[in-house]
Image (tube, rainbow, N blue to C red; front, side):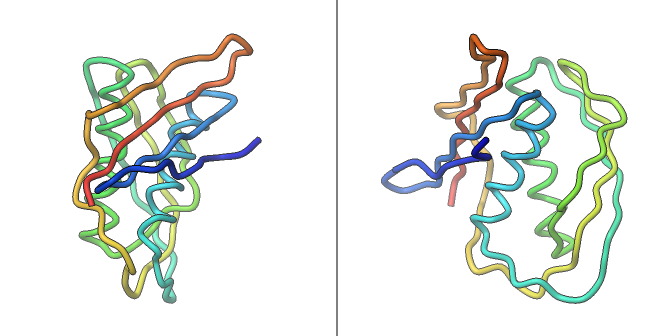
Length: 134
């Protein structure tokens, strides 16, 4: 299964992502965001923990990506593995494993709610569309 695609948008970055589970959908959205930032990797592995609580699944996706964007930018690192300890409709507790980054080729300013869409398809797979302010 394809993980994500970049959609046409005049000024910002718009992605569509898929997953066989909601957890996989969230991870694939993270991968799309990170790949779009064009990281130049450096030496050094990292491990972090994160906790997020939101009002609903759509807000949870935006909050998840926003928190990770903050961690990525402030710590200059990307995450290749997310181990969800808790994943519910409004809460995530996870361990992140990743790598340090020398620099990013592109900047993402924010994850937006504009055009946000997350749903489960008839076959059981999940799909989301997310817009990033660049």
